[in-house]
Length: 335
Image (cartoon, one colour):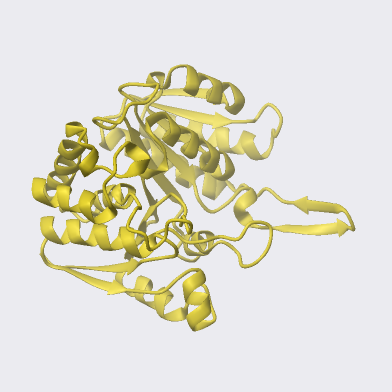
């Protein structure tokens, strides 16, 4: 079957890792029609906009994209392109599976959890202003429709994939209205949709402590926007970092799959970047469009390469000496 996928190479190491992911996906799933599109700092230099209209129009038409890392300036400059994409296409659910990888040694073993983050509300609504000089106000937005929507997604996800438990992280003891609404919606969606799935509530500071004590006690985590951003990176640290964790942004009729790590400008163009996170995101994309057999082949291939623990077949960030291309070639040989 033929599929059209929008491809955003991104900034820094983005073109290198997207090229690697494309090679692997083409080998496992022939017939993909790629449409390469600009976004990010590089697009701003060439087109005068970090998210050009041609990119928006292509994603609007095809409703599917694979995206490399994009630069977001800290404290100044343009707003996050990632946030703009999520808001424009109403990609309200960020899904990040986190699992222990073969041959990557960390403090923990057998981690297997999924972070589901509300992607469009909360403090990331971007509603902030300077009240008087030296005093800044930032508004946290929570709507019942948004909270119910992400809770509904989480419980359906857990039920359809045979997951055993959903844990909601919150701070409703302090933010009684906003986090209280999020918690109330999680409770009602559990009762309505997935009473067979275990449900628990954790105040987020305690939840983070419990995560680093014993991540095996968790299965699916449900969080509002800011908490989900922070905790998903924390969870990535349990299994080896952002280089070995995929990500997706899902809406009702559109999905963007992405590497969740940064653009790493210090190693851009040096053939040193680890492409695994984006390859794994490509696996999520293939499963999303029904190409599960191709997805399983890629997953088995990179698991086999990692299990060999051969320094010549893994990049420096995961204990090897391979280049981006050499690591990709090793996966292709396994395919």
